[in-house]
Length: 376
Image 1 (cartoon, rainbow, N blue to C red):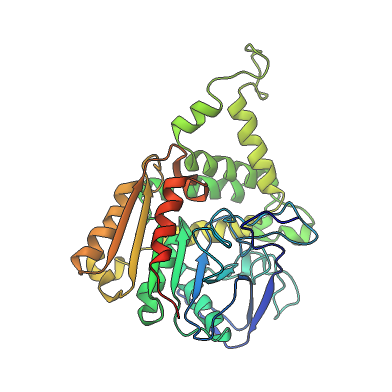
Image 2: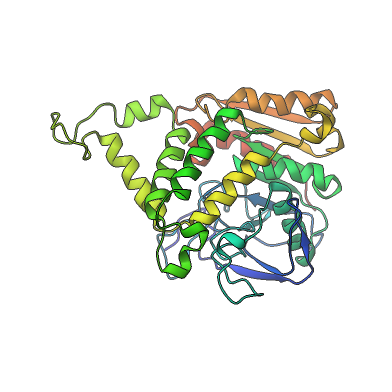
């Protein structure tokens, strides 16, 4: 039985594209597929569509459950549905698995139509801007000329911001949550450590591990453990795990002793069981490359001058990976251009992962903002 406020049972859809997509890396995809889900109904005016962009480990499965997987709840289900902040009685919500992903869209684990074998390391580099271009083509296929809003957290927030720069005439509102206009050197460093864990795994086989019938699980597990540490705050880890010992005392071994060690290993094992290592490499590189101000001599205000959407920017006090000051950089650049922007800094103890949680103040801000978006 579905829960009150749930969009209920959903099913993924698939869109195929045969017009070549040029990529920022200089490569191109001659043909590709995108997997997506929709919730709610597109109205007659076609002006109530909201695109939700996912973060590193996210997918198109944003809300609801599957008939054959009742426990597989969409990653932002607490936000999307009838009566929720992003209300599907008012909006037509779209979630898309990005190019290079491992949840059905064309990516390294998919078949290369030119060879009939899995792409592996031959899948071209993709950027945030490439994802937005592909999403825009999907909107064309769905008959949506202009989005009521684009919303995303973390890497999804970068996509929302990029939409307002690449297609300013096609976006009325944009919500950029727990994000940044570019990664800091420290963030790039964390990503590189995670990539090296995968690249040096003996089962990686230069990215063609599919042909060998293996998975670089050890490297992917370590990459996730490193990443997961950065998603949590020190306070949240301390409150949840502290220095608790599994055996009540030190046993002086390299096996799991502290509860936090057990938690990280569990998260790493779980992630390695469903995520693709090549997708992880591609996605972290897309994060590293994103920097809309680069083409403007580092001037973010100049880069954002083309944006015409009304913005909501949200940050969280304990998010040290995408700290509030990074969100304020976006706000200041928008204000410099006299753009309409609302900013909320939410006091939440959970760190970067706060954007996924059901915090009443956070959801209150989002609900009020979505309420003000007019549709016919």
